[in-house]
Amino acid sequence: MMPEISLNVLDVAENSVRAKATRIEILVTADTKSDTLTIVIADNGCGMSQEMVERVTDPFFTTRKTRRVGLGVPFFKMAAEMSGGSFRIESTVGVGTTVTAVFGLTHMDRMPLGDMASTMHQLITMHEEISYRYLYRYDDDAFELDTDEFRAILGDVSFAEPEVSSYIKEYLAENSAEVTAGRAI
Amino acid sequence: MKSLEELKAIRERMQNQLGVRDKDEKQTRIVVGMATCGIAAGARPVLNKFAELVQEKGLKDVMVTQTGCIGICRYEPIVEVFESGKPKTTYVHMTADKAEEVFNRHIIGGNVVKDYVIPATIEVGK
Image (cartoon, rainbow over all chains, first blue to last red; front, side, top):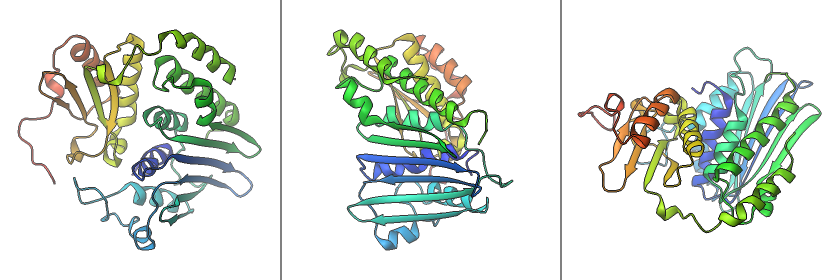
């Protein structure tokens, strides 16, 4: 069990990295009208067969060899479902995979969203060969980031360069805080 | 609110320094386990702490990176330190505070922090 949803996102997005995605979209939408918090992680990685899609929510399925259990997806699914939400994976071999987790926004058993800015910062700086689109929305307020824009400005300067890395960290933190505007998720 | 203009300014400042650095030059690698087990146990703040300190001190020959599960999940968060010409050091049950201590005493000071290294005999694969 992850103590915050942003850690589920970090973990499950690593599956996209291993699936050789070149583009990952992460959408976080809090909607008070429908009382939902929706997380979408969509990649253009290698995708999965229908059979594999059915198996990845099984804790005793994993692609790795170092241990016999794989809890990333099951944890994410459990976290969504225990908050009265839902979970689904759509995938096409050679096209990519989309994971959608819907949480009950004000449900008592929903984990806090946590530090999404930190999750995005880590994904962006640790896998800079991948381009990311990140959308963070709270009702009508939204913040969107596309690392292709960073890349166009920076050219071959690495995102891991100290100055660039701390810029990205602050960019994420400040813009997210503006959207959240004190309404803790 | 941060703007992209700031990033352009950073890019301009950095242009002169380009070509000086190369990943192959890195002498030390700090590797943090970031699979489900590591993340659930608290690896994210550990990785962040190392990355911050390396940036803060401007250590050009130290690289902070991540890896998957190495099979001893109950010792997570796990940090491996690889230094050229030395045996690998494996730190277990790490926290951000311990990371700072390892950074100061080991990465900067050159002394392995024995209290946090993995016990000599463990059973792998359980």
